[in-house]
Length: 439
Image (cartoon, rainbow, N blue to C red):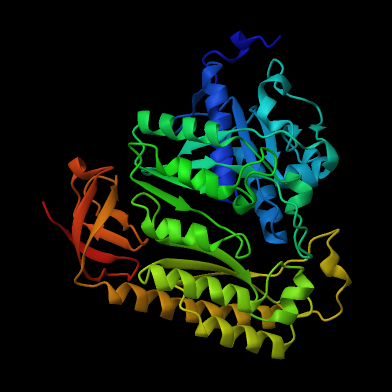
Protein backbone atom coordinates (compact mmCIF):
# COMPACT_ATOMS: atom_id res chain seq x y z
CA UNK A 1 0.00 0.00 0.00
CA UNK A 2 1.42 3.39 -0.99
CA UNK A 3 1.42 6.00 1.79
CA UNK A 4 0.47 9.15 -0.12
CA UNK A 5 0.97 11.25 3.03
CA UNK A 6 4.67 11.14 2.14
CA UNK A 7 3.94 13.23 -0.96
CA UNK A 8 1.79 15.96 0.57
CA UNK A 9 3.20 19.44 -0.08
CA UNK A 10 6.21 18.04 -1.93
CA UNK A 11 7.40 19.69 -5.14
CA UNK A 12 8.58 18.14 -8.39
CA UNK A 13 10.42 19.26 -11.50
CA UNK A 14 10.09 17.42 -14.83
CA UNK A 15 12.57 17.32 -17.69
CA UNK A 16 11.77 15.61 -20.98
CA UNK A 17 14.04 14.79 -23.89
CA UNK A 18 13.10 13.40 -27.29
CA UNK A 19 9.80 12.86 -29.04
CA UNK A 20 6.24 14.10 -28.55
CA UNK A 21 5.37 10.69 -27.10
CA UNK A 22 7.84 11.29 -24.27
CA UNK A 23 6.29 14.69 -23.54
CA UNK A 24 2.87 13.07 -23.42
CA UNK A 25 4.08 10.40 -20.99
CA UNK A 26 5.83 12.96 -18.76
CA UNK A 27 2.54 14.80 -18.50
CA UNK A 28 0.86 11.60 -17.30
CA UNK A 29 3.62 11.06 -14.72
CA UNK A 30 3.02 14.63 -13.55
CA UNK A 31 -0.69 13.94 -13.19
CA UNK A 32 0.02 10.82 -11.10
CA UNK A 33 2.21 12.83 -8.74
CA UNK A 34 -0.27 15.74 -8.55
CA UNK A 35 -3.04 13.35 -7.53
CA UNK A 36 -0.75 12.08 -4.76
CA UNK A 37 -0.27 15.63 -3.44
CA UNK A 38 2.87 16.76 -5.27
CA UNK A 39 2.84 20.17 -6.96
CA UNK A 40 5.08 21.38 -9.76
CA UNK A 41 8.05 23.42 -8.52
CA UNK A 42 7.83 27.18 -8.90
CA UNK A 43 10.55 29.35 -10.35
CA UNK A 44 13.40 29.76 -7.86
CA UNK A 45 12.32 26.83 -5.66
CA UNK A 46 14.31 23.68 -4.98
CA UNK A 47 12.37 20.54 -5.91
CA UNK A 48 11.88 17.51 -3.67
CA UNK A 49 11.53 15.18 -6.67
CA UNK A 50 13.22 15.34 -10.09
CA UNK A 51 11.82 13.25 -12.94
CA UNK A 52 13.90 12.92 -16.12
CA UNK A 53 12.25 11.22 -19.13
CA UNK A 54 15.05 10.25 -21.49
CA UNK A 55 15.61 9.59 -25.19
CA UNK A 56 18.18 7.28 -26.82
CA UNK A 57 17.61 7.75 -30.54
CA UNK A 58 21.24 8.81 -31.08
CA UNK A 59 24.54 8.94 -29.20
CA UNK A 60 24.03 12.71 -28.91
CA UNK A 61 20.65 12.05 -27.25
CA UNK A 62 22.34 9.79 -24.68
CA UNK A 63 24.86 12.54 -23.92
CA UNK A 64 22.11 15.15 -23.54
CA UNK A 65 20.32 12.84 -21.07
CA UNK A 66 23.43 12.53 -18.90
CA UNK A 67 23.96 16.29 -19.01
CA UNK A 68 20.33 16.94 -18.02
CA UNK A 69 20.58 14.56 -15.06
CA UNK A 70 23.83 16.18 -13.82
CA UNK A 71 22.31 19.64 -14.21
CA UNK A 72 19.12 18.82 -12.26
CA UNK A 73 21.08 17.10 -9.49
CA UNK A 74 23.16 20.26 -9.14
CA UNK A 75 20.16 22.65 -9.33
CA UNK A 76 18.07 20.66 -6.81
CA UNK A 77 20.47 19.32 -4.16
CA UNK A 78 18.95 16.57 -2.02
CA UNK A 79 16.06 15.91 -4.42
CA UNK A 80 14.91 12.35 -5.05
CA UNK A 81 15.91 11.72 -8.67
CA UNK A 82 13.92 9.38 -10.94
CA UNK A 83 15.10 8.59 -14.47
CA UNK A 84 12.89 6.81 -16.99
CA UNK A 85 12.43 6.62 -20.77
CA UNK A 86 14.36 4.91 -23.56
CA UNK A 87 17.89 5.58 -22.30
CA UNK A 88 16.87 4.28 -18.87
CA UNK A 89 15.46 1.08 -20.42
CA UNK A 90 18.50 0.46 -22.62
CA UNK A 91 21.27 1.41 -20.15
CA UNK A 92 19.74 1.07 -16.67
CA UNK A 93 22.93 0.18 -14.82
CA UNK A 94 24.92 3.02 -16.39
CA UNK A 95 22.17 5.51 -15.50
CA UNK A 96 21.91 4.17 -11.94
CA UNK A 97 25.62 4.91 -11.42
CA UNK A 98 25.22 8.61 -12.23
CA UNK A 99 25.78 10.57 -9.02
CA UNK A 100 22.51 11.69 -7.45
CA UNK A 101 20.22 9.22 -9.27
CA UNK A 102 17.99 7.24 -6.90
CA UNK A 103 15.69 5.15 -9.10
CA UNK A 104 15.81 4.10 -12.76
CA UNK A 105 12.51 2.88 -14.25
CA UNK A 106 12.13 0.95 -17.49
CA UNK A 107 9.31 0.99 -20.04
CA UNK A 108 7.10 -1.36 -18.05
CA UNK A 109 7.67 0.31 -14.66
CA UNK A 110 7.17 4.03 -15.32
CA UNK A 111 3.37 3.82 -15.16
CA UNK A 112 3.73 2.56 -11.55
CA UNK A 113 6.19 5.28 -10.57
CA UNK A 114 4.66 5.95 -7.14
CA UNK A 115 5.44 2.50 -5.77
CA UNK A 116 9.15 2.98 -6.50
CA UNK A 117 9.45 6.29 -4.65
CA UNK A 118 9.17 4.79 -1.15
CA UNK A 119 9.44 7.51 1.48
CA UNK A 120 11.60 9.69 -0.78
CA UNK A 121 14.75 8.92 1.18
CA UNK A 122 17.88 9.27 -0.95
CA UNK A 123 19.67 6.05 -1.93
CA UNK A 124 23.40 5.55 -1.51
CA UNK A 125 23.50 4.12 -5.03
CA UNK A 126 20.82 4.21 -7.70
CA UNK A 127 18.44 1.27 -8.02
CA UNK A 128 17.34 0.10 -11.47
CA UNK A 129 13.99 -1.54 -12.19
CA UNK A 130 13.48 -2.71 -15.77
CA UNK A 131 11.90 -5.64 -17.61
CA UNK A 132 13.42 -7.73 -20.38
CA UNK A 133 12.07 -7.04 -23.85
CA UNK A 134 9.59 -9.93 -23.96
CA UNK A 135 7.99 -8.74 -20.71
CA UNK A 136 7.25 -5.20 -21.93
CA UNK A 137 3.59 -5.55 -22.88
CA UNK A 138 1.34 -3.08 -21.05
CA UNK A 139 -0.08 0.06 -22.65
CA UNK A 140 -0.16 3.12 -20.42
CA UNK A 141 -2.68 5.70 -21.71
CA UNK A 142 -1.67 9.34 -21.95
CA UNK A 143 -3.37 12.48 -23.20
CA UNK A 144 -1.39 15.55 -22.24
CA UNK A 145 -1.77 19.24 -22.78
CA UNK A 146 1.26 20.90 -24.31
CA UNK A 147 2.51 24.30 -23.21
CA UNK A 148 0.40 25.85 -25.96
CA UNK A 149 -3.09 25.01 -27.16
CA UNK A 150 -2.84 21.41 -28.31
CA UNK A 151 -3.16 18.05 -26.62
CA UNK A 152 -0.99 15.02 -27.41
CA UNK A 153 -2.91 11.75 -27.42
CA UNK A 154 -0.79 8.61 -27.14
CA UNK A 155 -2.56 6.04 -29.30
CA UNK A 156 0.16 3.38 -29.64
CA UNK A 157 3.47 2.27 -28.16
CA UNK A 158 6.31 -0.02 -29.22
CA UNK A 159 7.43 -1.19 -32.65
CA UNK A 160 7.71 -4.52 -34.48
CA UNK A 161 9.78 -3.23 -37.39
CA UNK A 162 13.41 -3.65 -36.20
CA UNK A 163 15.02 -1.38 -38.78
CA UNK A 164 18.75 -2.04 -38.93
CA UNK A 165 19.80 1.32 -37.43
CA UNK A 166 17.24 1.64 -34.65
CA UNK A 167 17.10 0.66 -30.96
CA UNK A 168 13.56 1.88 -30.26
CA UNK A 169 11.99 -1.65 -30.38
CA UNK A 170 14.46 -2.70 -27.67
CA UNK A 171 13.58 0.34 -25.57
CA UNK A 172 9.80 0.35 -26.12
CA UNK A 173 8.89 -3.30 -26.73
CA UNK A 174 6.35 -4.76 -29.14
CA UNK A 175 3.62 -2.75 -30.84
CA UNK A 176 0.54 -2.34 -28.65
CA UNK A 177 -2.31 0.09 -28.11
CA UNK A 178 -5.46 0.93 -26.20
CA UNK A 179 -8.93 0.49 -27.68
CA UNK A 180 -10.61 2.91 -30.07
CA UNK A 181 -13.28 3.47 -27.41
CA UNK A 182 -10.68 4.47 -24.80
CA UNK A 183 -9.08 6.92 -27.25
CA UNK A 184 -12.45 8.52 -27.97
CA UNK A 185 -13.06 8.90 -24.24
CA UNK A 186 -9.71 10.64 -23.78
CA UNK A 187 -10.48 12.97 -26.69
CA UNK A 188 -13.79 13.87 -25.03
CA UNK A 189 -11.93 14.64 -21.80
CA UNK A 190 -9.59 16.91 -23.76
CA UNK A 191 -12.67 18.79 -24.99
CA UNK A 192 -13.84 19.16 -21.38
CA UNK A 193 -10.39 20.56 -20.51
CA UNK A 194 -10.64 23.18 -23.23
CA UNK A 195 -8.74 21.39 -25.97
CA UNK A 196 -9.21 22.50 -29.57
CA UNK A 197 -6.46 20.46 -31.25
CA UNK A 198 -5.14 16.93 -30.69
CA UNK A 199 -1.94 15.47 -32.11
CA UNK A 200 -1.99 11.66 -32.39
CA UNK A 201 1.33 10.31 -31.14
CA UNK A 202 3.02 6.94 -30.82
CA UNK A 203 6.09 5.03 -31.93
CA UNK A 204 4.49 3.52 -35.05
CA UNK A 205 0.93 4.84 -35.03
CA UNK A 206 -0.10 3.34 -38.36
CA UNK A 207 0.32 -0.05 -36.67
CA UNK A 208 -2.51 0.84 -34.26
CA UNK A 209 -4.85 -2.08 -33.57
CA UNK A 210 -2.30 -4.88 -33.22
CA UNK A 211 -3.41 -5.64 -29.66
CA UNK A 212 -7.13 -4.88 -30.01
CA UNK A 213 -8.07 -6.23 -33.44
CA UNK A 214 -8.84 -2.72 -34.74
CA UNK A 215 -7.12 -0.48 -37.31
CA UNK A 216 -5.71 3.03 -37.44
CA UNK A 217 -8.42 3.89 -39.96
CA UNK A 218 -11.04 2.77 -37.40
CA UNK A 219 -9.45 5.15 -34.92
CA UNK A 220 -9.39 8.09 -37.35
CA UNK A 221 -13.08 7.67 -38.19
CA UNK A 222 -14.09 7.37 -34.52
CA UNK A 223 -12.09 10.42 -33.40
CA UNK A 224 -13.51 12.46 -36.26
CA UNK A 225 -16.92 12.12 -34.63
CA UNK A 226 -15.89 13.69 -31.31
CA UNK A 227 -17.71 17.02 -31.03
CA UNK A 228 -15.65 19.94 -29.72
CA UNK A 229 -12.27 19.03 -31.18
CA UNK A 230 -11.64 21.32 -34.12
CA UNK A 231 -8.34 19.87 -35.33
CA UNK A 232 -6.51 16.55 -35.38
CA UNK A 233 -2.98 16.09 -36.67
CA UNK A 234 -1.35 12.73 -37.43
CA UNK A 235 2.18 13.02 -36.04
CA UNK A 236 4.27 10.49 -38.00
CA UNK A 237 3.08 7.54 -40.05
CA UNK A 238 5.08 5.01 -42.07
CA UNK A 239 4.49 5.32 -45.84
CA UNK A 240 3.52 1.65 -46.15
CA UNK A 241 0.86 2.16 -43.45
CA UNK A 242 -0.56 5.39 -44.87
CA UNK A 243 -3.33 3.84 -46.95
CA UNK A 244 -5.17 5.58 -49.76
CA UNK A 245 -8.39 5.28 -47.75
CA UNK A 246 -6.79 7.25 -44.89
CA UNK A 247 -5.53 9.92 -47.31
CA UNK A 248 -8.93 10.25 -48.97
CA UNK A 249 -10.74 10.32 -45.63
CA UNK A 250 -8.50 13.12 -44.33
CA UNK A 251 -9.12 15.05 -47.57
CA UNK A 252 -12.87 14.97 -46.87
CA UNK A 253 -12.69 15.50 -43.10
CA UNK A 254 -13.37 18.82 -41.42
CA UNK A 255 -11.35 17.88 -38.34
CA UNK A 256 -8.31 16.01 -39.69
CA UNK A 257 -5.88 18.58 -41.03
CA UNK A 258 -4.11 18.44 -44.42
CA UNK A 259 -0.80 17.84 -42.65
CA UNK A 260 1.29 14.69 -42.82
CA UNK A 261 4.63 13.68 -41.37
CA UNK A 262 6.05 10.71 -43.28
CA UNK A 263 9.47 9.17 -42.57
CA UNK A 264 11.43 8.49 -45.75
CA UNK A 265 14.89 8.03 -44.14
CA UNK A 266 16.60 7.65 -47.53
CA UNK A 267 15.77 8.41 -51.14
CA UNK A 268 17.99 5.54 -52.31
CA UNK A 269 16.38 2.13 -52.75
CA UNK A 270 19.71 0.43 -52.01
CA UNK A 271 20.04 2.27 -48.69
CA UNK A 272 16.38 1.57 -47.82
CA UNK A 273 17.16 -2.15 -48.20
CA UNK A 274 20.20 -1.83 -45.93
CA UNK A 275 17.99 -0.01 -43.42
CA UNK A 276 15.39 -2.83 -43.64
CA UNK A 277 12.63 -0.34 -44.37
CA UNK A 278 9.33 -1.79 -45.62
CA UNK A 279 8.85 0.28 -48.78
CA UNK A 280 10.81 1.66 -51.72
CA UNK A 281 11.00 5.10 -53.30
CA UNK A 282 8.27 4.21 -55.81
CA UNK A 283 5.77 3.54 -53.01
CA UNK A 284 6.80 6.71 -51.17
CA UNK A 285 6.42 8.79 -54.33
CA UNK A 286 2.97 7.33 -54.97
CA UNK A 287 1.83 8.42 -51.47
CA UNK A 288 3.07 11.98 -52.01
CA UNK A 289 1.34 12.15 -55.40
CA UNK A 290 -1.94 10.87 -53.95
CA UNK A 291 -1.88 13.39 -51.09
CA UNK A 292 -1.24 16.27 -53.47
CA UNK A 293 -3.95 15.09 -55.88
CA UNK A 294 -6.65 15.32 -53.22
CA UNK A 295 -5.06 18.01 -50.98
CA UNK A 296 -2.88 20.29 -53.15
CA UNK A 297 -2.08 22.58 -50.20
CA UNK A 298 -1.18 19.78 -47.74
CA UNK A 299 1.93 20.28 -45.61
CA UNK A 300 4.19 17.20 -45.82
CA UNK A 301 7.10 16.85 -43.41
CA UNK A 302 9.68 14.14 -44.11
CA UNK A 303 12.34 12.48 -41.91
CA UNK A 304 15.70 11.78 -43.57
CA UNK A 305 18.81 10.14 -42.11
CA UNK A 306 22.18 10.96 -43.66
CA UNK A 307 25.44 9.07 -43.42
CA UNK A 308 24.12 5.64 -42.53
CA UNK A 309 26.52 2.76 -43.00
CA UNK A 310 26.40 1.77 -46.66
CA UNK A 311 25.38 5.23 -47.90
CA UNK A 312 28.01 5.76 -50.60
CA UNK A 313 28.41 9.10 -52.33
CA UNK A 314 26.50 7.71 -55.32
CA UNK A 315 23.61 6.52 -53.13
CA UNK A 316 23.42 9.91 -51.38
CA UNK A 317 23.28 11.72 -54.73
CA UNK A 318 20.43 9.42 -55.80
CA UNK A 319 18.64 10.23 -52.53
CA UNK A 320 19.22 13.98 -52.91
CA UNK A 321 17.83 14.03 -56.43
CA UNK A 322 14.80 11.95 -55.43
CA UNK A 323 13.98 14.17 -52.44
CA UNK A 324 14.43 17.27 -54.57
CA UNK A 325 11.87 15.93 -57.05
CA UNK A 326 9.23 15.33 -54.36
CA UNK A 327 6.52 17.92 -53.65
CA UNK A 328 7.18 17.92 -49.90
CA UNK A 329 7.31 20.89 -47.54
CA UNK A 330 10.00 20.34 -44.94
CA UNK A 331 12.82 17.91 -44.15
CA UNK A 332 13.76 16.78 -40.65
CA UNK A 333 17.40 15.79 -41.16
CA UNK A 334 19.25 13.48 -38.76
CA UNK A 335 22.87 12.34 -38.90
CA UNK A 336 23.25 8.59 -38.51
CA UNK A 337 24.49 7.55 -35.07
CA UNK A 338 25.96 4.13 -34.29
CA UNK A 339 23.76 2.32 -31.79
CA UNK A 340 25.09 -0.73 -29.92
CA UNK A 341 23.36 -4.01 -30.79
CA UNK A 342 21.93 -2.88 -34.13
CA UNK A 343 22.31 -4.82 -37.37
CA UNK A 344 23.64 -1.73 -39.15
CA UNK A 345 27.00 -2.25 -37.44
CA UNK A 346 27.58 -5.25 -39.73
CA UNK A 347 27.53 -3.02 -42.85
CA UNK A 348 31.04 -2.19 -44.09
CA UNK A 349 30.97 1.28 -45.66
CA UNK A 350 31.33 3.98 -42.98
CA UNK A 351 30.64 7.67 -43.71
CA UNK A 352 33.01 10.18 -42.12
CA UNK A 353 31.66 12.81 -39.69
CA UNK A 354 32.72 15.57 -42.10
CA UNK A 355 30.78 13.96 -44.96
CA UNK A 356 27.71 13.49 -42.74
CA UNK A 357 27.87 17.19 -41.88
CA UNK A 358 28.11 18.19 -45.55
CA UNK A 359 25.19 15.95 -46.56
CA UNK A 360 23.08 17.36 -43.72
CA UNK A 361 23.92 20.90 -44.81
CA UNK A 362 22.80 20.25 -48.37
CA UNK A 363 19.52 18.67 -47.31
CA UNK A 364 18.78 21.44 -44.80
CA UNK A 365 19.30 24.03 -47.55
CA UNK A 366 16.92 22.06 -49.78
CA UNK A 367 14.40 21.96 -46.93
CA UNK A 368 14.63 25.72 -46.45
CA UNK A 369 13.95 26.28 -50.15
CA UNK A 370 10.92 23.99 -50.13
CA UNK A 371 9.43 25.42 -46.94
CA UNK A 372 9.90 29.03 -48.03
CA UNK A 373 8.30 28.34 -51.42
CA UNK A 374 5.34 26.61 -49.70
CA UNK A 375 4.80 29.59 -47.37
CA UNK A 376 5.18 32.11 -50.20
CA UNK A 377 2.42 30.43 -52.23
CA UNK A 378 -0.06 31.28 -49.47
CA UNK A 379 0.77 34.98 -49.02
CA UNK A 380 -2.41 37.01 -49.52
CA UNK A 381 -4.81 34.18 -48.69
CA UNK A 382 -7.21 34.12 -45.72
CA UNK A 383 -6.94 31.01 -43.56
CA UNK A 384 -8.19 29.91 -40.12
CA UNK A 385 -5.42 30.01 -37.50
CA UNK A 386 -5.46 28.50 -33.99
CA UNK A 387 -3.72 31.19 -31.94
CA UNK A 388 -1.54 30.51 -28.90
CA UNK A 389 -0.84 32.50 -25.74
CA UNK A 390 2.40 34.50 -25.70
CA UNK A 391 4.28 36.64 -23.21
CA UNK A 392 2.66 40.00 -22.59
CA UNK A 393 3.52 42.37 -25.41
CA UNK A 394 5.15 39.70 -27.59
CA UNK A 395 3.53 38.72 -30.91
CA UNK A 396 1.15 35.75 -30.79
CA UNK A 397 1.70 32.73 -33.00
CA UNK A 398 -0.48 29.98 -34.36
CA UNK A 399 -0.81 27.55 -37.24
CA UNK A 400 -3.07 27.32 -40.23
CA UNK A 401 -4.79 24.03 -40.98
CA UNK A 402 -1.86 23.12 -43.25
CA UNK A 403 0.71 24.02 -40.60
CA UNK A 404 1.94 27.42 -41.77
CA UNK A 405 3.23 29.33 -38.75
CA UNK A 406 1.59 32.75 -38.46
CA UNK A 407 2.48 35.78 -36.32
CA UNK A 408 -0.11 38.39 -35.25
CA UNK A 409 -0.10 41.31 -32.77
CA UNK A 410 -0.68 40.36 -29.14
CA UNK A 411 -4.28 40.11 -27.94
CA UNK A 412 -5.11 37.98 -24.86
CA UNK A 413 -8.69 37.50 -26.03
CA UNK A 414 -7.45 35.45 -29.00
CA UNK A 415 -5.73 32.75 -26.93
CA UNK A 416 -6.87 29.26 -28.00
CA UNK A 417 -9.23 30.75 -30.57
CA UNK A 418 -9.48 29.77 -34.25
CA UNK A 419 -9.63 33.03 -36.17
CA UNK A 420 -9.62 33.97 -39.88
CA UNK A 421 -6.26 35.58 -40.68
CA UNK A 422 -5.05 37.25 -43.86
CA UNK A 423 -1.52 36.02 -44.47
CA UNK A 424 1.08 38.67 -45.24
CA UNK A 425 4.80 38.53 -45.95
CA UNK A 426 7.49 36.79 -43.89
CA UNK A 427 8.15 38.18 -40.42
CA UNK A 428 11.50 39.71 -39.49
CA UNK A 429 13.38 36.45 -38.91
CA UNK A 430 11.49 34.50 -41.63
CA UNK A 431 10.13 31.97 -39.11
CA UNK A 432 6.48 32.78 -39.84
CA UNK A 433 4.14 34.80 -42.04
CA UNK A 434 2.82 38.04 -40.57
CA UNK A 435 -0.94 37.99 -40.31
CA UNK A 436 -3.92 40.30 -39.91
CA UNK A 437 -6.77 38.92 -37.80
CA UNK A 438 -10.15 39.47 -39.46
CA UNK A 439 -13.05 39.92 -37.06
